[in-house]
Image (cartoon, rainbow over all chains, first blue to last red; front, side, top):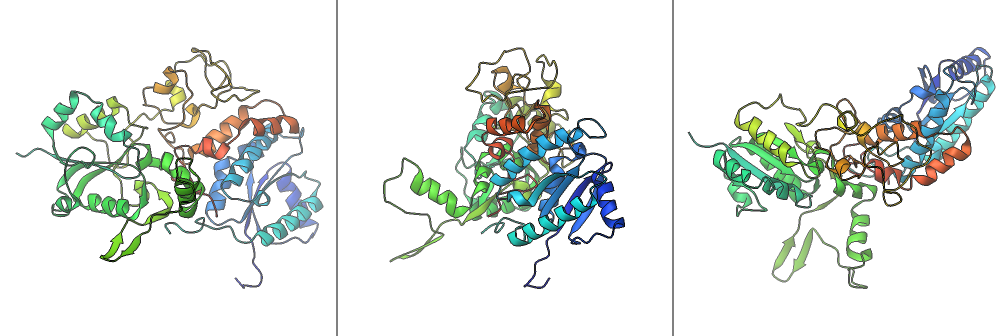
Length: 143
Length: 317
């Protein structure tokens, strides 16, 4: 990694029905967005355990994007509401653990919003780049 | 044939685990009858050099309580590991970091600042901090080096069994001693408690998991028969290992999670966070804001006993 430009690693958990299709549309529409995101498809944002986000951050991710169907449009009726509750509480918890709010982001992206997906990834990559790498061990394991 | 040798040690702990051993009351005499206690700093006069002089593996069972937060504790953890056939992380601090691991929300400097400057019992303007090395006219004085991060015993040495609890309940201690004495310990790596969650064992009436307001324990007097979580108290039952005898639940207090994550769970705090958030009713932004407002200190609550052993282990500084 060159010292002048830090390339953040962002893990994206995208729901199968809306946001993954939205990301697919961004690709097939030839929209440009940073390649810093690594996408993991899940069936629903309601499937995303806070453990997944913590594990990603602890194992090398600098940021985590969670994207799902707009409120009221969940394929499983209410999974995205569960996700909204969990991620809000998770973010408050992570803040206490010294992890900046911008590193974990919950967004609603429908299957037709390829351009929205591209702009979210672009914006988030720049925000996380500004924050710099997430310390792996919180400033030293022992001393 | 000589009796098996037992060692007990305390590291970063409050002493409650040692008291719990004594709480076995007259059974302690039975324990003393079947084993020779070769090291127990809190109760008997043994020195480190006595342990150093023992052959490797000559201690049959070592109960190590307390987290590891300084160089002396780490050294003794390594020493006792080498000398012990079976090493048990005894109590929540040794297993998961416990209450001392709450200082993983800060570092050595922050902990010292709190303990030696901010705490109301300190003499005003006196800023004396412990130093690893102090030079005096007679030479150098040495204190153990204090770590930035509180560690579990298992993060320092290989641990054979976990016996959780703050402190471990007496019947669990007796179960451990009995299993040891009759050579019926499970395969190494096991946690000597229940495989079920606390909720699974709890006999309170559970009607349906949904809450629309979270109360702190001092805000309500809960019904003694109904599920505490359903009454709006943050109870660790869904994410915590059972086997504790439900001392808190029976005292009408919600579980605080001292038995650590239930079987198969990696991060107790994250699981509880997930459970609480998903049963909180209301889908609007205001509902979420209200939930966040009602949970004053989520990280300190969800990781009360398990910060050191959690996925993130400590605050990023």
